[in-house]
Image 1 (cartoon, rainbow, N blue to C red):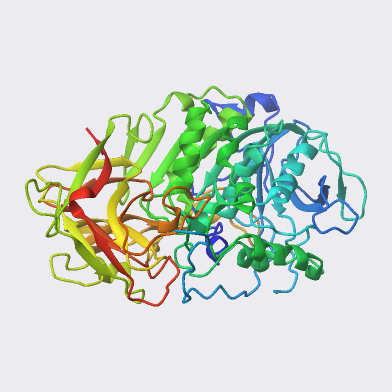
Image 2: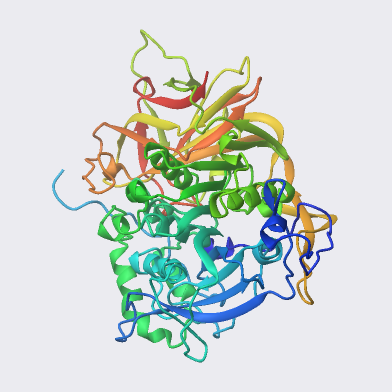
Length: 619
């Protein structure tokens, strides 16, 4: 599974090498004085003596239709103190394992638009990850919860629908006295130990739920930290009307994911709901519909009052970069306080490879928003971008305000950036071969290939940085009423690059990031990006169902042989094409690793003189 495999993994780290923590507070100073020093909360509380509790929060929903409110299972770890503390909260559908569920078959035919031209139930391992070891000694409670229909929670999973948002929100309501909770014996639980200030955090699906909850404007939620998170489930499983897979998981869709995380007791009660997901997600047309609108959090960005610290990999082809870009733009429009980290990895947690900087920044972020400590973090540059492995840049914001649209015309004969004037009309064709990968199709761009059209710019005279969302516009005809259209933006030039497909490699350095107990020592190995030397890099890509050339909500038939103008976006990026390299745009039909793969042979005819690449170039 895509989001599941990308869940948070405790690849450890720390700010300082193994510190010895005291379990008591000196008598000559007050607890408040000791907790905050030098503008930061200090590790004055004992992790070993922390209070641990389990319970169930009652949510105002009945998604499994059993006549009772769904209950969300929670685990709590908090400092052993009479001082009220804020909460760091992560809710996940993965804590009790995954079911082995087959993906949909993608080797099927595309369909033209109508009309005229189970794993066993497992108790979660206690407090995996780093939040507890690091933050509990610093005066924070940590809550780990199980999302609706997973593990010990009631209800049904729905891949981002309203009930999952309500279930996650209920925990914050309980922390602020607006909802009921019960311990394992059924006795009521009262959260009288907390200030009610909550920060949500998580990676992948675990980071998506904070996005969703933030759109409810729930009182008490002060900040969210969505890492590699979804903001629109349509953009996760679709692209401009095309059925598109998360990278590495061809054929997955909303129903498959829900089946995989359905690990609750008596899962059969959710069968009707799961069946409705498969029907309503509509893999036939790929159109935006009511099903996907319910799972679009971007349109509710105006309701977000919590601050947002976005983290995303620029090479994340699981949760693609459009997810953070649209969300970030919407938050900016509504003046939401925010910060962003963009790194060169794929579907990763920065804790895995930027431990010291990450924990330091996250610590200051939570101190500012949950303890209201004036540490200056909001006066710093908003964006931090990894340009090369371990090399980071600070920027005032993202995308760069100096980015301007630069139109690069396509030219006959594979030229890019120079328009041919006074030349007779020259059409160029490609034939769809769904069995060839994008990597195969972009290689050797100046050699003839019937299955792609490659257009290359001249060697660059200086570095060119793009920041934002590229677009492609082509004038073309298709010899069939339905097809895939794919555009690949390529950097041609030999260089050492992050090998995001291989991911991270473990180093020999082991660091302790927090207090430990037997079985959880608060220490782990450090990791770093793997690199490779390559002659090209697919920088970004984008897809379109030609029938959705007007709108992703309504397919309009394509008349074979008729010319149309097709324009679509590629995934957002922040990338530097180096001096001497060449910018390339490669047009293909089906994208082996992402789109439906119909029978090959579709012929697409392009008029380069009426086609162009549009790049957000930083001037």
